[in-house]
Image 1 (cartoon, one colour):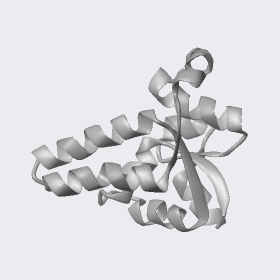
Image 2 (tube, rainbow, N blue to C red):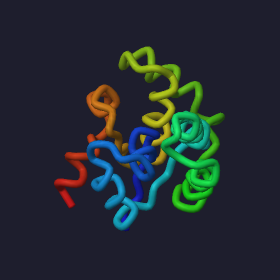
Image 3 (cartoon, rainbow, N blue to C red):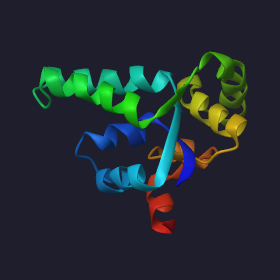
Amino acid sequence: MISAVIDASVAVKWFASESDSSAARRLLDVVEPFAPDWLLLEVAHVAERARRNGVLSAEQCRGVVEMLEAAVTLVSARQHVAAAQELAAERGLSVYDAIYLALALDYRLPLITADMELAAAGGVHLADFVRRL
């Protein structure tokens, strides 16, 4: 199993039916995912929105966060904020996205994302990563 940083665009695909959802789920079999603890907030926000729209039940919504806590090694975002600010300025990213890249660079791990902009800034697009498996 290899270690990699994943961002919220990948984690959301674990519970939502989106393009590349099956590819994202395959990652769970071959990747030990790492992410900043910020991931919980981002994905919980998406899950709550899905609950409000009737796509998820309240129990499923809570289950998403529990699944993330069990499946992903969460690292404090606090120690990576300064690097994320620099990367955001250098690469034209939001600090929210750059925190994932900062973590990947600090841990010397690939960043797997379904976000084309983040992939272009230094990550590996989910579809490309899965094709290599």
